[in-house]
Figure 1: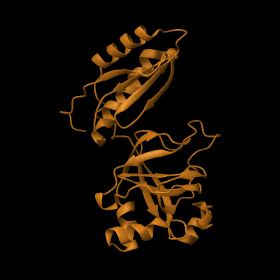
Figure 2 (figure 1 turned 60 degrees about the vertical axis):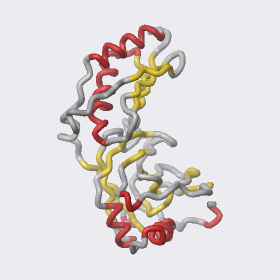
Figure 3 (figure 1 turned 90 degrees about the vertical axis):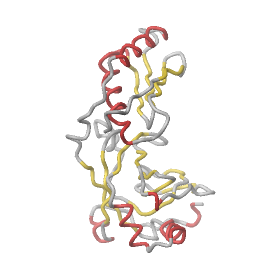
Length: 243
C-alpha cells in the first residue's frame, strides 16, 4: 500500500442509526489498508453498540444501536476514530490466497465466445488472462456471499448483459466492467459468465457464513471437466430459457 495516500473522510447521514464514512472517491486496491483499519477501529470503539459494519470499495457503513447511542454521539465517536486512524500497512503480510477451481467452458460460460469476439483473443488466452491475477475482495453484497473482486485485466473489461438472465446457476464465475465474482447461489444476474466453480461460497453452517471476506485475496484456478465433476461440480449447461 502506498503510504502517501491520505484519506479525506467524510461522514454522510445514512439514517437514524447509521453513518456512511466516505474515505475515498476512486477505487484503488491501496485503499484496503485504510478500509480494514477503520473496520477494526470501529469494532473496538463501538463495542456492543455496533449493530453492523459494511466495508466497500471506498466507504464503510457503520450501523449502531440507536437505543444505546444517539446520532450525534455516534458521529463524535466516529470523528475520534478517524482522528486516530492509521492504515494497516501489514494487511497483506498474513493474507493467504484462496484458490477457487473453475471449469471454463462454453456450456457453463457462454460469454467466453462474446469475449473472444470482443477482444479478438482465443478462448485459451482469455482463460489465462482471467486466472493469472490475484484478485482482492472489495465488498460483499447483491446476494449473501457474493464477493465483488478486482481488478480485472483491462483486456477483459466487458459491460453487463443488456438483458439479465432470470436464472444464473450457483457457482457461475462472471465478469462485469473491471470486476469479477462467483454466484454463491442460483439467482438472476446480468454479468458475463465464463465458467463455474464447485466451491461452496455461502454456507449457513460456516461461522462466517461467506467463504470470502473483504480484504481476502483470491485466484481462479482452471480445472478440467473431470476434475470439476470430482470436486462435486454441476455440469448442467446454461439453459437458453434462462434469458
